Amino acid sequence: MKKILTICIGFLIAVIANAQRPGGSKPEILLEGGVKADATFLNFQKSGAPGAVSTFTPGFTPGGFMNIWFNDWIGIRPELNLNFKQTVLQWTDNSGRLRSFGVEIPIYVTGHIKTFGEDHVFIGIGPYTEFICYAKWSIDSRKVDLLEIHTSGEPMVQDTQSGLGAIVGYEFGMGISIDFSYKICCYNILQPNTSQGVSLYPQTISVGLAYKWGKK
Image (cartoon, rainbow, N blue to C red; front, side, top):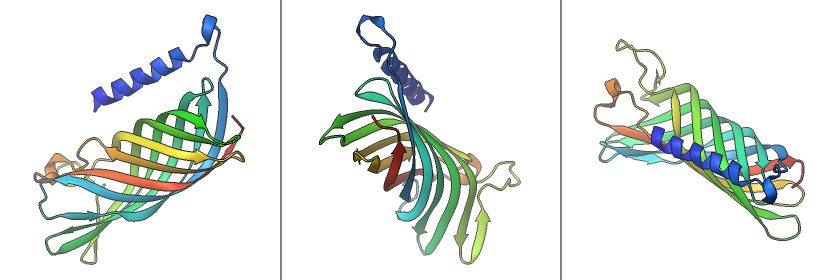
């Protein structure tokens, strides 16, 4: 994971360095900001759990974003999102539901291509980190707090998730955009003392609307 993040940071530095205009002049940086709301669907990539089925289940993600353009075609897009997520995991005869809340910060390296008038398509890729504030597992009318410290001195799941994400969208000239994003955690979120050989890697698919202030 550290190697992947190092590569992403190095790529980001290279993007900023190459944003210099010919002749060594400073780039004209344009800042835009806005708000967004996504329907977010969560499930798990898994290993060590034969027969387990994780179902994409809808949640809700409001948030905000900023576009930092270094030139006419490339920039970065940091976001701050509030994730209300859930998923259903069925294994043998048991079926449980995970509900969680977290604060997510993705940072995409983005590019865009103009289409008609002021409309454009944009695409981005980059790392993300989510800080989990609430995670409960409901099964057989019981609720288990997955972040509670157990006798081993650790919670059942890690309270941070980091991985890679990608986003693609279409923005209309009036500042409204439709976007689609995908994120996957790069490591097992179960603590070693509770995993029992099972690995869970959260992945999300989001689709939503955004509105920005400022105009590129």
